[in-house]
Image 1 (cartoon, one colour):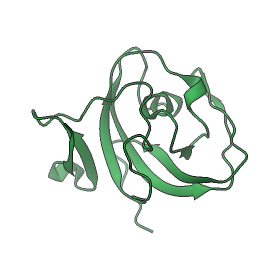
Image 2 (cartoon, rainbow, N blue to C red; image 1 turned 90 degrees about the vertical axis):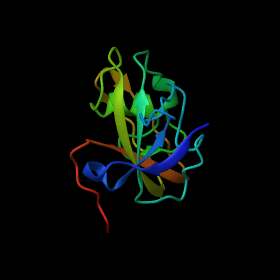
Image 3 (cartoon, helix red, strand yellow; image 1 turned 180 degrees about the vertical axis):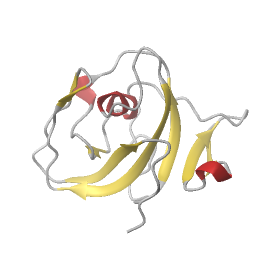
Length: 134
């Protein structure tokens, strides 16, 4: 069972799904923010650990922001935050939906376009990036 709680003071604006040992919860290459019921938590940041593995380009739409049904780990590789062969910790920020999401080809991942309105988004942030509280 995962519990969402506030992370260390060094990452004070980041929440993390934590395992019982305090490490960020590992997600797989299919897990999306929508799967984790994070839609509507706009402006909140969450940390996860992606395992080494294989990105799933068919499971990512947009170029940052991404639709909230996109794979967290694949979006992180697309954004250049982790390498698939190594995995690693990923921080995402939940955002409102958009009217359109443009795909792109980055870091050997071709993300898809989504030309309709989608109700939730997320971005992948670098660990040292400050929270955007607009």
